[in-house]
Image 1 (cartoon, rainbow, N blue to C red):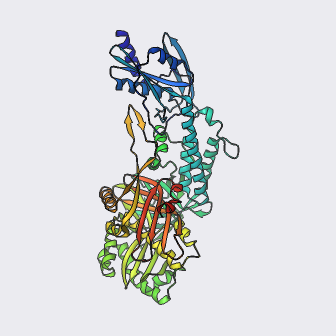
Image 2: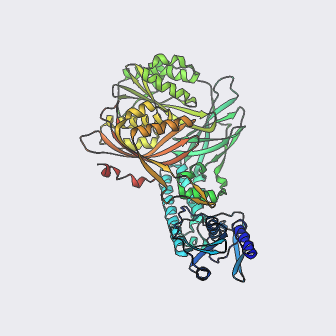
Length: 627
């Protein structure tokens, strides 16, 4: 019995000291899904276990303990230790197996600075159980072919990420391109060296080399220029500097960056090529880092999250650091109140829904004092300019972070429904409890001479996708744009009353919830499905939103890549598939939204179907299923 106690103690320590018995080496085997299917309890003898150990087609681990569960946990840990090794491409691992009676011990010599622990993702991890006196002996074993299948799934994921990166790069979406290429690079490095050597780019280069070159090329092509320095008021110690981001001579469509404001590192986003930073006065240059890792978004993809959490070391790209010269910026003092005539000169008639110059002047008469009131934070002046509904929106707006008007030229006026839309005013919103800021276009709906609604505008790429449907009636396109802007703004400003009104009572609502990781025997456990999709009633969905809004400092939604089609020529019912970038104080993800909406009444659209999915392809033919 003393011999068994000694062996049990040694076996329990195996995972901690990282010892390995098998010659089967898998570099970076951090598996994305963990489902251990346990075969029925069977009391095989030691001979059967020895046969498995001698069979070169299996990888195995053994555990000994006084309870079956503890022995099984130890066996799983031991199995993982056989598959877990260094993942650094420069790492050299030498394993020597030394026979010591019936035991096999391994000595491991590793050169490198990164070691990971595995989580099993195989659907056929088998178990043999035996008993020796008061101890249970468990052998966990798995066919090497099952491990190869898992790596094939990972390779498919890498291909998907590369294709997504290529499409983003073509559309000047720097953030999406960097994120997809970087995640693909990390996944390639998680594949065993012997398999990785066959992963080639179309150019013939190794895929790891090709992905590094793509990332470097994008970072080198990002040009950042400080164009304006805005002093909020005469007493302000910090200045707001406006930056222009360009990628291969085009405005950057999306990109995140970090910068040091003299006190802390802050995170912000670029919108349509425009970015802002707050810096102490007399600052002559600044250090800015273009984001490419996107750690906050790992959890939006379970395979990526499981792997990258085990491989947390950041691959450095010095090209991400940009030194920006601030000495050439044009200083701008706080703008004085613009007269109606001055503001009207800056207004343009929207080509989608033209209105005459007389109406432009009328809308300028309303917008000019509104803009100045926001700049001066004199909100009491705004209420007489608003309808009851408009004031509700405005109250929500001024509570949504710290609002600053950063641009107010080239305003567009469009005839819409029974009023007018005025767009083109850019504002930045920052938050006290979170080092994050957003730039949004403000869109005002003016009806009967009063402001009746305020929205956050769509990103330019989404606007272009809708406006490119030149065969559709201009008003229909404008109604679609306004509907999506209302929708995204309602989430940001927590307008449950609007959301409750826009969903039909019998709406089909399907939400995607990411399955949380569970820890079992120190294994990261994730179901084979990335997300679980649940059907909710309207009432259930509203209650869920109420809980989300209550615990978040902010929610922000950005729409891109809109695919829109009419369900029939004679109706105003549309199917919309659009990329949704969701941000909140504690969570972020990227996915795709399907909406089936009736916009025949521009002021009271109805959503009949709302479905979220992490994969765009799953939604493209969703409407056919609905009908």
